[in-house]
Length: 578
Image (tube, rainbow, N blue to C red; front, side):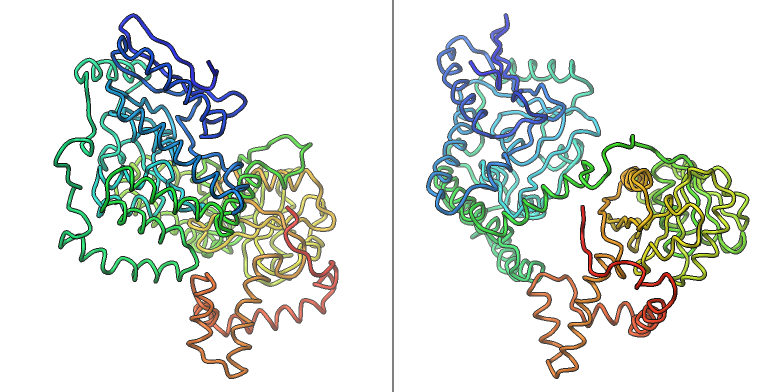
């Protein structure tokens, strides 16, 4: 018997199946799992006469992560037939659990996502810990895929089309309580012992459970696709979906098709429909691109762009120079992460306005019931507005967030350097000015780095980290650690004017404006940009940014490039290095 699924039967004749794939942090539906599940089902069938019930649990910190992306990303079109048959094999395993004439209960101790939730849905009863680490959902759409283990089939039959489609097409994950309210869970438990006790109680009280769709006369909740109310919703669903995706993302369209088509046929046929769409998406290039992005993002989070030698360092006190929208936003996310913040501007009154930005955001959280007043007060207590450089004493990180002007940035960073601790990192939140040039304003240039946040800071996940010519590895590592400390995603980019994102953004808008100047219709420019996958067209973006600001940045860039330490001081070009 494989160690991937440990089989134990107790004195009450209840079998416990413990999922514990060797050599992996999480359980996935890889080949090892599939072979182990075949063995397990055969043993369950052999023990059927004496088995009272089955409990499925995990030895990992998570319950089950779903499909093995390393396997999925490598499925080429030439292997489509093999993949389709393999997918049907997984469905057959889950169906065997579902139709096993003994109660099967899933005990969910952590994340149950994708195939993990599909495994749970195949069980007769689902109990989860009422803990923060428990998340449930079918996020396959975010990887360009659809739920391939019967997710579209079972969820529609459990909840009905109207309630199931948003969960399938949005890829949203739910907390344990949200999942209970949505109908994905049957019970919550306070701890591991409570999980086991509730499972055993339910098994003994329900010796021969049968899923609703396996009973005579079953009807889909809310009605099938031909029901007048559902038909009315489905008539406009494709148009609404198209307006969101512009046809660039096939997964939501295939999910809609699989769910609606599957709701009109029997269970077995619905699973074949799902398997065909799943195979089409998995062997397609768009899903491979999206899975590749997922791998790259995880590599970033794991520190692939971070120097390996310096130990991880958590900032304790951060000084922010400039209390405008950017400075106020950085102060908010920093305090939210539990770090002390000194928010400095020309005087206390201006700095207080920067803190008021955090007050507004936190008040909204309290008003919506997402935060308690005492939590709000604790976060605000970490932000100290000031107009004095002396209050920056003891800061181990300074983030300059003033206007895009080299002289002004140089003045405030030089003044701050005089009072901070010698090992402090000094960062500039600039979107365009090369860091090597800005570093000349301070004496310890090896401690100077670029840290480009995006507006609004509380919502935007990305932070560019820019290493200047003299920036050392310790400084880069500490900047990287801080970005992760405040729950943002760091990317390390080259030191060139505009770095990476601003150059990409500028190219997009400049090309749109150039096309307009060449006589191309504005409507066509915007439409084609959205069809290419951009959320907003280049002309609309230019209007939102304002043409006057774009013009100012162009003039300022030209002037700065001619100045000592300007763009000519670093190599041009560049791009993502991490």
